[in-house]
Length: 254
Ligand code: ADP
Ligand code: MG
Image (cartoon, rainbow, N blue to C red; front, side, top):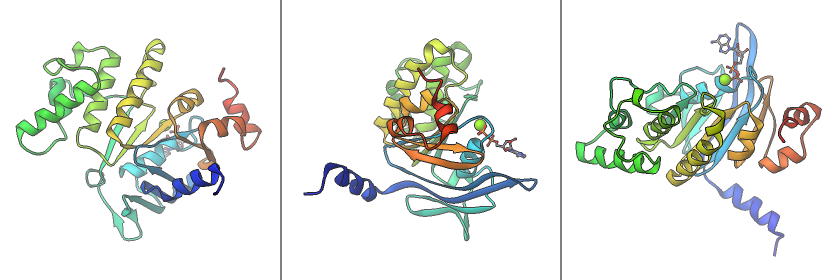
């Protein structure tokens, strides 16, 4: 029988990747901002793209979302090219959900209206999905309220429900907790993670905070100057940093 570590490794290899990014590259005014970035995220898995401000995280996420065009590379979702030599699907055809620091709820719509916004189909089915999600984010009964009546944490949960409502194949999250009060952040991170896992999405979460990646990630992809310099399970990346700069980056976690 192979050792447990080998079994685990081959099980990982067998995992079908929801999101597969290969050789993604982008320059602005001849300055390389994202260089040869490759990563994979399986269904039900959270990968954190972690690195200091300005290293190219958001640009990477925006290319996967389809709102920024790569100079080179390939992006596949469920094995289909959404960007590549012969494909460039618009954002709405990629099956991705988006969540940013600025929740950008529609102020004139109710909570239920916000969550239902991206849903197609008959009204009863939409309402069922809205109710299901509001229950999952612990906001049952909030459907008739408007965003300005909610706290920041509640707005974040509505934004999460809205992004997940159409059952995106891949969730892309860019610093989704950084606008929140420090005291609430850990609780909201944990609650968000539970909802993401329950929905089974493949999640790529961008953060500049090592602590957040340690708390949420199944895998960390450490980025610096446009490149991924290390990938692995949080514990391994933390305990065996690839170089001094990586060690220093993690050093303010206590
Ligand atoms: P991060 O999200 O890691 O903080 P970004 O991907 O936002 O980094 O930005 C990486 C670098 O690319 C930064 O130096 C930023 O100024 C630059 N950049 C991002 N978008 C543009 C753009 N549209 N035009 C020119 N430079 C850009
Ligand atoms: Mg950013």
